[in-house]
Image 1 (cartoon, rainbow, N blue to C red):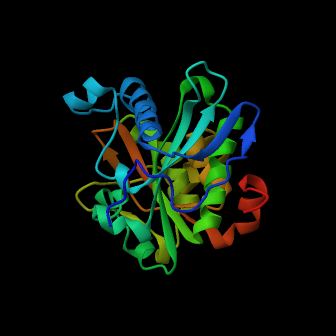
Image 2 (cartoon, rainbow, N blue to C red):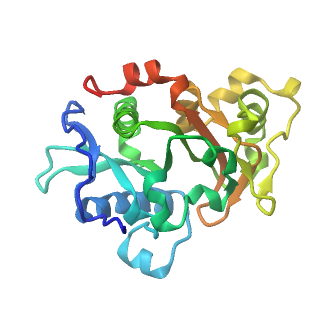
Amino acid sequence: MKKSSALPPAIAFPEDIRAGNLQVRLALDAHEVAAAQALRYLVFVKEMGAKVSAALHDDASDRDAFDEYCDHLLVLEHGHPRGPRVVGTYRLLRRSIMHGCGGFYTASEFNIGPVVAHPGELLELGRSCVDAAYRNRAVMQLLWRGIGVYVALHDVTVMFGCASFPGISPQAHAEPLAYLHHYHLAPPELRLTALPDRYAPMDLLPREAVDAKAAFAALPALIKGYLRLGGCIGEGAVIDHEYNTVDVGIVVKTALVTDKYVQRYGHDNA
């Protein structure tokens, strides 16, 4: 059955996950999904230089065919005269509903066969972004708390997706890419691999040439967050010319980090 982004989520999501005037919850209607898409346009297109169609430029919106099948996690700032403002978002697509849109987005960049072969519910994480004025610990923690609740509600066993470095030059990120390859490569049974026609090597430096501490510090904040939750990295990177990024595959097996995940990011009643 086709999932409509205008309908509220099928499973009730708690609405009391807050920090000051910030709240995290799922989008409840098409208007809120559109607000998330507008934030994505602001970050991905205006800030990072992603290439979108003229129609999307006219609408100031980043959207695609996957959006209507996904749940959209939002961080809302309350207190504005026109109502809550979306300042952070994540797109969430579960295995149990992805057949309607023909598969997972990540499959356009990586061979996801080993992850798909894993039993249980899968969750693809994507289109994560935060308004530049709100890139702080509070907003990121709320996003992770929201994901923790979602994982618990849907009994997710594995999360996966793409995470990005800015620009389209792997060499510009040689040390952090090599660090991820040498120190955080996923085990074969969960390893995403860049598609052959898109494969860009990550082992641009030998292990002994990598300063692990400096390389970790140079990672984008989102990738650091995945690693801190026990996440691991696929083999090979992908240059995404459309979004002006170098992408790596991420996998997090939630069973390995359940206690840490719920205690650090989850909801008391999850």
